Image (cartoon, rainbow, N blue to C red; front, side):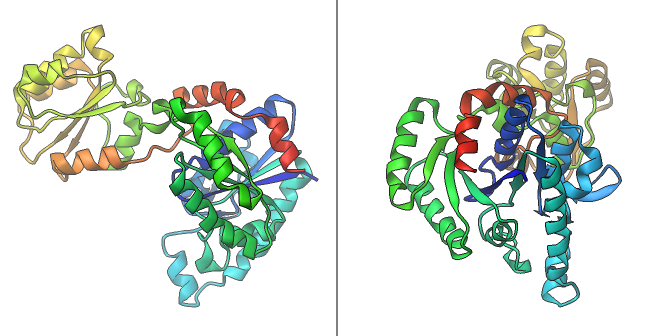
Length: 365
């Protein structure tokens, strides 16, 4: 039978999937047979001929396990699932055998099975299958992933811990992610002492990494549901800064930082032309990831020709204001996809530096 680790979290965007990926990479590198299960998936996608969860599809793609995708994601929630359960049109009880059978099948062929929950401990309660319920159902102990900090983290861990303990589920460790490198050791020490009454081992996860946290141009294209024009080979570039092109043309150019996405309205012909020309210069290509061009006024014919000829990647939208775009982009939390090679390469490099697989396996006998 496989060792099972249920990856839970204190909330969204704590780094459950990156933690799952890191553990799978480490175990596989040591020759272990690894498996992944997202028992109740909230992000539907069609992959390998089946409907399933987006995170499971990512793992299947990266580890060449497309044939196991139906087992990896036995239940995925569609946009109307919650309403249908509450209206009595669908029985959540029907999910249980699909989940337990998938888990059993994966256990039979794995040495280590990573089971990833969704959000905080209570997510899935509407179906009677919260993360705490799911961990009990699958007889799996829990690794709780949280973001960095001290007071807020202790509060969140204690709140989530209650649901797991109510179900008789053992939470064996807490992994703190997105740590400030300068305060890493101090934060882990304070968290260990702050959580000492609860018999929890506190482990340091990943430091805050802009490469992992920031979105790619491809991600913004999907976020805005707009096609990427220009050189689409640059879709995987990571955006580290977002700048509104509101100042004079030359001031905007002076303020450019490395890997910047610029938001420039369609009426700023001079600025659009200047940026398209600067993009041809190597020193500026490093700074300019691409453009988002909002505005109901069409881009002038000559400016459009210059943009297209330059190859500068850009997205065109008439449905968002500059302020709306800035908020959407800067507030978005990037999720790793199988196409984000730079993120995946960094994750593979950092995993053995941040996690001791032997320590973890000892915690989950």
